Image (cartoon, rainbow, N blue to C red; front, side):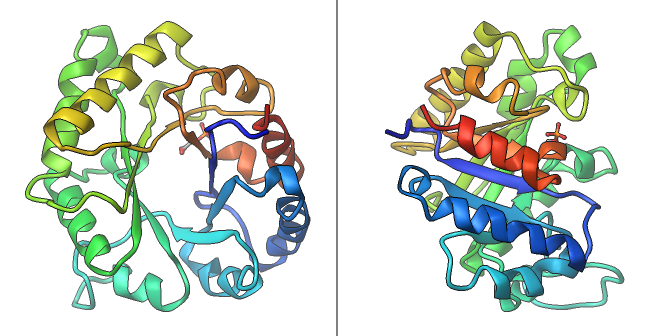
Amino acid sequence: MTNNNNYLVANWKMYGSLKDLKSIKKVIKISKKGKYKNIKIIYCPPYTLINSLSKLLKKTALKVGAQNCHYNEYSGSYTGSISPNMIKSVGAKYVIVGHSENRESGESNSTINKKIVSALNQKLKVIFCIGETLSEKKKSKTNFVLKKQIYEGLKNIKKLDNLIFAYEPVWCIGTGVIPKTSDLKNNLIKIQKILKYKFKLKNPIILYGGSVSSKNVAELNKISEIKGFLIGSASQNTNKFIDIIKKSII
Ligand code: PGA
């Protein structure tokens, strides 16, 4: 039986080349086995691989997403940027927006809001990342920061059905550290409450991200508020990712 943690999003970040796509065939094979069928596996490779990966995954249940997009829905004079329409045209069904690695380089809540609007207009599903930094946590600002990111990120968006939320405490990303279970649960409950009561989302899907590995995924899985994981470095190695897939079933 599968539990309710049924999203596994692989964020490859700025890693991976065409030859790395081959190993995904092993994941395709596993995903067809009965007990893994309920897991929604979404690969978010660099832009350069979206087209090829979409072709590889065409007749499978696995989906492709982008790691970011521009706020302009279609096209424009934005050197080096990619629009939601462009990523959709090469087969992406999802897009990650608001990742802390982009927030760090100056992406504001209002830009994130515009990106979400454009991506949703393009019928992409948005994986909206939120999370506090270590200094915000130390100053007991976590609640304030999460609330602000959610309110400003979702400003004036009426239809939230195609949104998935990813709570990624910034101090857990790439550090090997995960939050204390009680803290994580508390923060997830707070996020859930905002989404349910302020944004009228009946069943918000909230993922956890930050140093998820085959070593901690079973423990994290016990937290019922978590509906899946956004996985960075452990997803870039197919064997490690398969380990996580196997351990995400209880
Ligand atoms: P990590 O990254 O799993 O390597 O900590 C997660 C993320 O950045 O989404």
